[in-house]
Image (tube, rainbow, N blue to C red; front, side, top):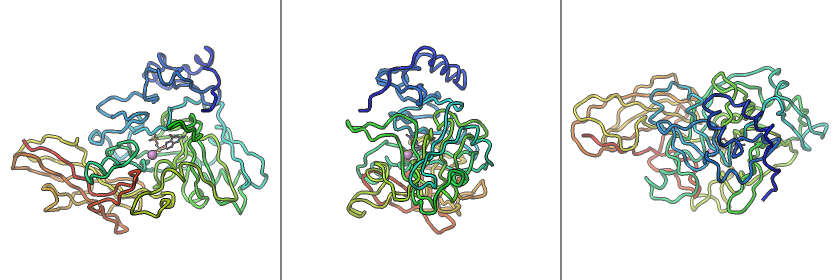
Length: 414
Ligand SMILES: Nc1nc2c(c(=O)[nH]1)N[C@H]1C(S)=C(S)[C@@H](COP(=O)(O)O)O[C@H]1N2
Ligand SMILES: [Mo]
């Protein structure tokens, strides 16, 4: 276990509360600030986390109509997306935290780039203001946890998996504004022989089963960094919220969520390949269908679709229901969505409500007038422009990553 500095004094606590973004968060923080709302660069949460009233360590409020809390994480309820547009509002976006949200102040934050992959070999710093002064880019991208849909390996395929039992709500779409990582790397003097980066968060070190794995960090190939990665400081036109990485996070489009490091503090730039437990122990595919020792670290997300309906919903017979859902693929824009309302015997096309784009999702709809009462299984199946189609079964891996199979969605007609 790392040794933590003592809890913050009263003055830094007051400063912290003054920095709280909204009245609701303030209310939540007032009672529990020492538990998790400690600026990571000045003080760390202590044992108070365990006894804190906000067990999740998440700053924003998590109403049960929108979220299911799973340990330190909050899953969005997919059915609740029915009244959202193409972008997921920040207050409804899922949160995946290895520990807890650190409340950081942009004014004393800085990013450090360091390592033998820099020309000068001495660390280079960027303040928040310096990043904001660089040319900005704005783009829409989904963030989706590698384990989204994990529980379906068990509920649908009878296969055991480890990790957070997400259903389908560990995904959201947002409009991100920030600076290109490539611009920052060039300004920092990245050398031609640099091959790997390792961005790292400022949240507490991740400790599990008595092992301290250090701060959340994961190697990022230089090629991807120069392709489309951004250092985001805005989400849907507002400063990045605390829970989503304030003041700056990475957004790594189309890759598994772990690549998009929140609360970014430093980036190692290396002339040799890098590893971390997030590239060796986790985020590889292990199991009989995979190489012994695991696959390469996983990168691109998979293909999915989901109904905006609770599992087990009851629908009235002999009435037309306008079923809605979303479909997305990290490989290519969605081309079509087919649905079955009879357990997979007959399929028909759903109507797409949006222009398909890569790194986004499309909403779809289909009318359904059920006659017979009783349990029914609804299915939906996405095909993308690269020819990928959701299969009937996902290839199992012990940690339950990349579930992309057709989901069997139970409802009851009454
Ligand atoms: N520093 C840090 N970055 C992180 C994480 C974390 O726990 N700490 N979780 C990762 C994982 S596993 C996912 S899926 C995404 C979730 O982003 P969100 O919480 O903004 O939805 O953040 C990633 N970045
Ligand atoms: Mo994740």
